[in-house]
Image (cartoon, rainbow, N blue to C red; front, side):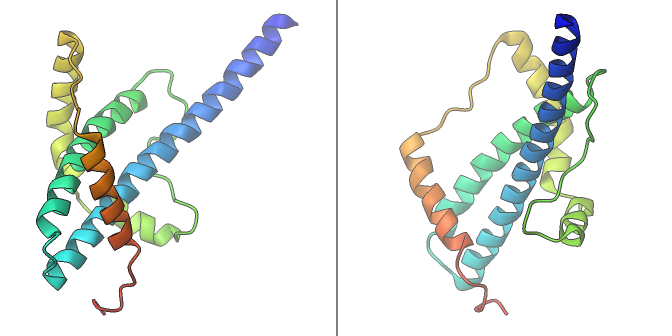
Length: 155
C-alpha cells in the first residue's frame, strides 16, 4: 500500500513537472516576443533608451537561449512524458501563439551552438551568467513600462 502511494505521488510529480517545463518554455518565448515589440517601439519613436534596452534584451536573449538549451535537454530525456512544445499563455489566442512559434527566431538559430556550450560548461563545472542585478532591475522596469504602453503610435 505504501509503495502504491509513492508511485501515485511520483506520477503526480511528473505531471506537475511536465506542466512547469511547458510553462517555462512558454514564458521564455513570450518574453522574447515582448522584447521584440519593445525594441521596435523604441526604434520607431527614436527613443534614446533604445541602446540600453537593446543591450539589456540581448543579455536576456543569451540567457534565454541557455535556458532553452536546458529545456531541450529535458525534452530529450528518455523518461520525459510531457509534450515538447511551446504552450499557449492564458489571455492569448492559440492562433497567435502558433503563428509565433512557427516563425523562425534567433533562439532557434543559436540553440545548437548553445547546447554545445552547455555541455562544455557542465564538463568544466562552469555556469557564469552573472550581471549587475541593480542595473538589470532598473532596465527591466523600463522594459516592462515600455511593453505596457499602448500601441496607438505604431498604428
